[in-house]
Image 1 (cartoon, rainbow, N blue to C red):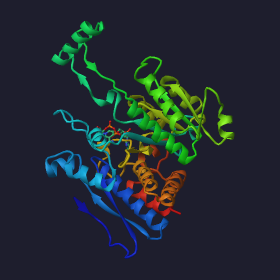
Image 2: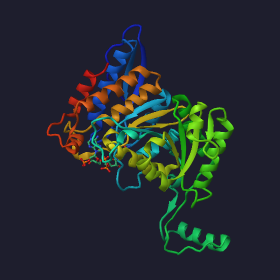
Image 3: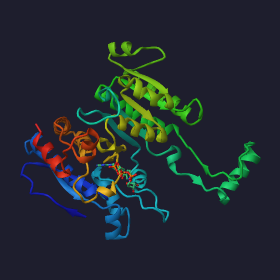
Length: 399
Ligand code: NAP
C-alpha cells in the first residue's frame, strides 16, 4: 500500500480515501479524478476537509506485486474505511479466475449497483432529446443468473440435475443442456427495493418503477415485483402511492412518490419513447445490466457513465466502462465517468457542495465543447483535449 498526500492543515478534518487505480486507462483517469476531487473539496470546504489518498492494490498491479489479483489487505482496508474509489480492472481470461469486480461486490456485500443516468448538454447522443432521460438505476448485485451457479453441458452435475428433474419433478430436459440457476430471494429483493425507495424519499424523486420479466418467470422475476411492492406498502406507506389507484398527478399533488412496475422489454422502449416519465428504476441483476448500458448510450455512452456499488456499510465508486486497453498510457482516455463517480462519493461522504460543484464543472466543460477524443470524434469536432487537459478545465470551472 502506498500513500501520496500533502501535509494536512492543523485544524482540517482528514478523510482517508482508499483508491484502486485499476488497469489499462485506470491510472491516468484516476490521477485526473483525484486532482479534480482534491480541488473541489479544498474549494467547497475552504480547506476544512481534506482527503488522504491511500492506494490499495487489485488487478494486474496487485498480481505483479503480491501474486494475488485481489489481496486480502485490499478488502480489509476498504472494509475498515467503509469506502473506496476504483478504476476499471482487467478480468484475467482463463485459469478459472472469477471477475475481480464480482469478487469485490460479493466479498464486501455491495448489493446495490447504483447508476445515475442524465444528460450533459454538448455530449453527442444518438437520440433527439437526450435531456429527457434522468434516471437512477438500482440494480440488485448479488443474485439472479449473475450468482454464477451453472454447470457445463455433459458434466456429472448437469447430468445428475437433468436426471433428478426428470425423475422427481417430471421436467424433461435434453441431455445436451448446460444448466444455470436463477435464484431471486425475498431478502435480497427487499433490501434493493428499500435502498431505492430510501433514495427516492431523500432526493424527492417522483416515481419508483419496478422492472421485471414476471409475466414469464413468475417465481423469480414475478416474485421480485411482489416482494418489492410488499416492501413499499409495509415500510414506506406514508411516502408512496401506487399506480393501480393513483395517477402521477395524484401522487405529485400529495407530495408522494408513485410506485409502479414495467415488464422489462416494455421498459426498454419506454426509456426511449417516454423517458421523462421515469425517475428511479429497480431491477434484478441481469435486466439491470442491459438496461443501465442502454440508458447510458442514450446520454452519450460509457465514457460519461458513473456508478457505485453500495452495501449497508461499505460503498465502492467506479465508472461503468472497462480498461479500454488500446488507449492505455496515451493520456487520451475520457475521465468523465470516473470524475462523476467521484462526485457520487463526495455526496456519499456528506460533501454535497463539493459534489454539486464537480457535476457543475463537468457540465460546463462539456458544454464549452472541451472533450476528449471519444466524444469529440462523435461530435464531428476536429479538436480534442487530453485526459489531463480535460481535468485542468474541470478544475478551472469549479465554482
Ligand atoms: P471497455 O474497456 O469499456 O472499452 C470498450 C470501448 O469503449 C473502448 O475501446 C472505447 O471505444 C470505449 N471506451 C470505454 N471507456 C472509455 C474511456 N474512458 N475513454 C474513451 N473511450 C472509452 O470494454 P471492453 O473492451 O469490453 O473491456 C476491456 C477490459 O475491461 C476487459 O478486461 C473487461 O473485463 C474489463 N472491464 C472491467 C470493468 C470494471 O472494472 N468495472 C467493466 C467493464 C469491462 P472505441 O474503441 O470505440 O474508441
